[in-house]
Length: 183
Image (tube, rainbow, N blue to C red; front, side, top):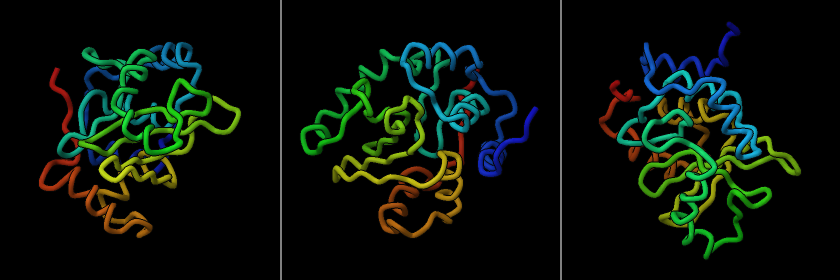
């Protein structure tokens, strides 16, 4: 088995999940990508597959194609468009299934996380955080595991110091790093 990127390994270690429940298989990811026409980042797939169903801190959830209740799917992405009507009304942002549209992958309260496809490609690469309290869009550097680890450890570059500290407090406050779904 190939070694994991350093920040992904740190996140999985901090989460402490030994036997993930509802962990997606390679076939789950292949079905999702075939149906959506998108290619999810390998570190995202490894993170969700390594942790299975669960949430970070107070309830930061990332979508999982093996979730027995509400799996990440083409239909779920279309259903979630309703959540973003306010953002769409105030910005020029495009959302999946529009060409080049943001692809929803996670949320806590009114904070949403997306991937933006590369230009003229279906490869999802750029991680984006939208604070819908203020309809502000923040492109984030690096991978989702890197962002989570650095945010949790207070090591994220001080590009948005107040907003990131608020987000960090919203997610973790006095909660464990990750809570796995019980089988």
